[in-house]
Every structure is written in C-alpha cells, then in structure tokens.
Amino acid sequence: MASDHTRSAILTAAERLYADRGFSDVTLRDIVAEAGVNLAAVNYHFGSKDELIAELFVTRSIATNRERLRELKAAEEQGGGRAPIEVILRALVGPTLRGCLGPENQRSTAARFMIRASIESVPPIRRIKNREIDHLRKFAGAMRRALPERSDVDIYWGLNFALAMAHHTIRESERLAKLSEGKCDLDDVEDVVARVVSVATMALTAGKAEPKAPPRVAAR
Amino acid sequence: MASDHTRSAILTAAERLYADRGFSDVTLRDIVAEAGVNLAAVNYHFGSKDELIAELFVTRSIATNRERLRELKAAEEQGGGRAPIEVILRALVGPTLRGCLGPENQRSTAARFMIRASIESVPPIRRIKNREIDHLRKFAGAMRRALPERSDVDIYWGLNFALAMAHHTIRESERLAKLSEGKCDLDDVEDVVARVVSVATMALTAGKAEPKAPPRVAAR
DNA sequence: GATAGTTTCATACAACTGTTTGAATTGCAA
DNA sequence: TTGCAATTCAAACAGTTGTATGAAACTATC
Image 1 (tube, each protein chain N blue to C red):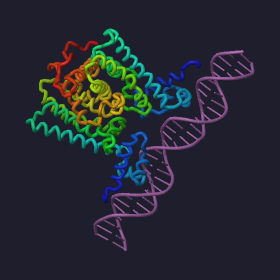
Image 2: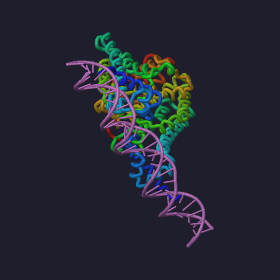
Image 3: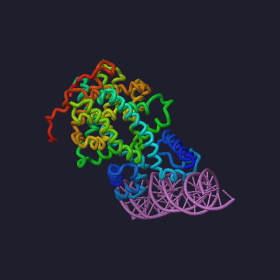
Image 4: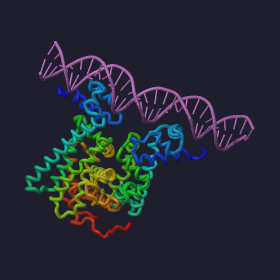
C-alpha cells in the first residue's frame, strides 16, 4: 500500500479543478499536472476517468447523506420514533444547503465541487444519483410517520418539492441573486433553509388531501 | 436562398438525436448521417456545433416564453392590469410543464429535447438561459402587482420556488415515479401544474406581510 | 542483498472531435 | 448560354482525448 500520496494528490487536484472550471473542460492531463504526478497514475489508481469522478462524488455525497440521517435519527429518537415534519424536512435539505451555499469567498472546494456536480450532471454522477432512492425512502418513511393521515402520493410530492427547492436554489443561486439584484441573501444559509422548510411544510400540511385546498398558515 | 432543405434537415435530425441520446454522445457526424447531408453543411449553415445547439434551444424556448407571456397578458387584461397570483403562477409554470411532461409515448421530439436540455445543461444552453432574466422580471412585476403588500424579497423567493418545483419535477420525473412506485402520476400534467401552483401560492401568501421577521442581524 | 510486488514513468496508441479547404455542382438571372 | 453566387461535397486538418504498454524505480520481506 505504501502511502496514498499519489492517489490523494490526484483526488485533491481533481476536485479543485472540477470545482473551479467544471467537468467539461478539465482533462486528465490538467489533473495530473496540477497534482504533479504521471498521466498513467489516474488509470492505475482509479481505473478510468469516470471512476475518479465517481469516487469524488460518492465521497462527498455519503458525507451529506450521513449528516442527513444523523439529524433525522436524532430527531426521531427525541420524539419517540416520530419527529415533527419540519425537523424531518430540515434534516433533508439542511445538510445539502449548508454544504453548498454560504459566503462565496469562504466556500470550500468540496462545496464548489458539489455545486458543479449539481449543475453539469455528467454521466458517472447521474448513475450514482439514481442509486440514491433507498436513501430518500428513509425520509419518505419518516414523513409518513409524522403525517399518518396524509396519503402516500402527497408525501412523495412534498418530498419532491422540498428537494426541488433546495437543489434548484443551489443550481441557480447566481441567477436568483442577479434577478433580485442582491435582495435575496443567499449567504444567509439558515434563512434559506428556513424558507425551504417552511414552504415544504405548508405543502405537506395544508388542506385535507387535496392540494388545491385554501392556503393555511403554517409555523415559520 | 434556394430552399432551406439542408438547413432544416439538420435541425430536425439534430433535435431528434439529442432528444434520444443526449448531447454528450451525439457527434456532428451522427447528425449529418441522420440528415443525409454533408458534414461541412453544419458549419456552412450554422457556423459551429454550439450555434446549432443554441438555435435549437432558442427556437423552443422562445415558443415557451411566448406562450407564458400570452397567458400572463390575457390574465392581466381580464383583471384590469392585475391578475390573481394563482393565474400568474400558472402562466409561469404551465407552458413548461405541459411542454415536457405527459404520457411518454406521445411526447414530442421537442419535449424530449427540452428535457435533455434541462438535465444536461451544455455550455451554449447555459449561456442562453442566463439571458432569460429579463423575461422572468416581467413575471416578478406581475406578481408584485398581484401582491402589493408583499416584499420584493418574498416575491423573488416565491418565483424561485415555483420554477424550482416545475423544473426539478421535469428533470427528476423518472426518479419520482420510481421512488413513489408509480403512485405519483406524472402523466396527469394538469394535476402537476395544480400542485406546483398551489404550493407556490401558499409560499407567497402564507403568514403576514413579513414571513421573515427581522430579529436576525448579519451576525453569524 | 536478492527477490517479489507495487508504483511510477515516458511514451505511444488509437480513435474521435469540430472545423477548414478548395474543388465540384447547382440554381438563377441576364 | 453565359456568368456568378450559393450550396454541396470529399477529403484532410489539427488537435485533443482517455487509455495501454513495458521498462524503470521503488519498497518491503526474507
């Protein structure tokens, strides 16, 4: 095994370059130059370029998923197996938003990498995202326990909308800042989380079973 | 000028191939083979591959935008310059959703192309999307008129969330169908529109004028 | 210090990419 | 028909890409 020096140098360099310049115009040669290693090292250590990208993405997303589940579990244990829907939603979107938003100048390489992954969606990353369903099912289960009177369909739509707001806000944060002329403060992450959770909660609790029911005020 | 035969044959073939196989693995040679024209024809008629993609996307998105504005204008005229927020939101997300969702087997090439564009987000398309801000501003203006007591910040967030739900649902429709084991019917487009509009309306009308009580300062 | 296994290296490979070129062809007006 | 521009064509170009190779350098074990 020796030391992972070369291997981790590649990972570090690749993540930084992808974060800065996107997937489409970073080549293996750019990466090995940045890492100060030989071109063949990538295929030796990772098998292929796609597997390198996959490893980068998997590492980051299992970190996020672990944090999500940690928050979910803590909330459910505290509530005796049933957590309030707001807290569940916060556990779902909080880690992702916190990991990708915040003041630009202090955004980590990992954060910028995940934003890129969210925007460009290259094949190896798409393949991994498709295997994320089991993870989401755990949240669907928790949401069902929190809102037992709600139909499965409504639960899934609520989950979908919560993820939609979080991911879209990350993807299009620049555009939203420009559109609002800076009025929407995307650096105030906790405010963004609160807004997403608030709307998603309303989506899941308003009216009876019909989504077209009159708006009902929810906790904010 | 002659006839646009070659030019439009390229456009048709390109849109079909991109719709079927995505941007990343369709080459110019694939396109000209499908269109039955010479390789150089693409550069002759469009200048470059990126300009071809851009033309395809622009054509489709101005069609959608025109439909959006048509619905918006109709609604505002009927209401004497002020339309209900639900109708504005419906004009915003309706055309996009109707253009991309619906029974898979009867989805048009244009629809499938726009789904691809939404998922893959290739450079020339991103550039065009960035110029869409003026278009969105018109909706922000209409929303402001519909909800004059609401702050600009809330308006922009509501707009952002409405687009988020629509676009994310399109992008991830397959995953949502799988996650919900088919319980969420993504072919019932009008139901999807109603759900998105409903949630976005709640986001914009719930609570007081101040959904974000300002106890929070810049401190972090 | 020889050996076996791992890792690094320079280099070549093979294929594919979008684009350009310049000649051939076509269509149309005078 | 002639002339001229617009269009089409086959071919080549120029570059890049990820990957494979086989020898060299290293490392640890005996």
